[in-house]
Length: 178
Picture 1 (cartoon, rainbow, N blue to C red):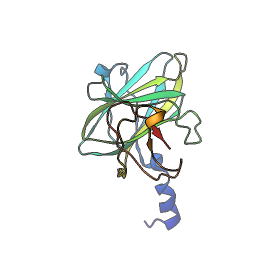
Picture 2 (cartoon, rainbow, N blue to C red; picture 1 turned 90 degrees about the vertical axis):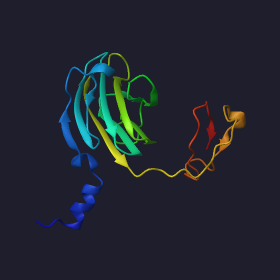
Picture 3 (tube, one colour; picture 1 turned 60 degrees about the horizontal axis):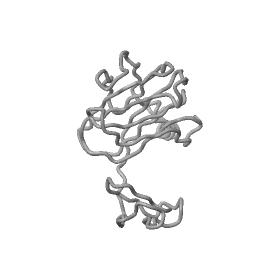
């Protein structure tokens, strides 16, 4: 079978069509009962009001990941492998046609991580999809200058929205003015 160039280019812009779809498996309401999922998967989930859904995944090598939800209005968090240290949190990415989508994109080291999904409020319930995939890592081109923990001494990045510099910061409180 031969695929047309138009079909191939269409598939390049539809990674969720290529993702392995798997169902959510309950119970997965705590870090101790997190559902193990493969990177490259789309998980079809159902969030009950006040519920937390937990998932775990392992990266064999450092990479850039994208964790994304669509459907119910969610908040997502990336945590360490024990589910006790938050690495990143997102409420509403608003980068897609799904107005209440949540999305995280970040370079990350090899290891095991957990994802926590909750409703935007305790009353949010409904169907949602969780996708996790690999992206090309971002190469950081700037160096932050300490101290930069307030707007008065923030590290300048260039014109806002131009992507002039990408920073890899420290774990201290930082402010970056774009």
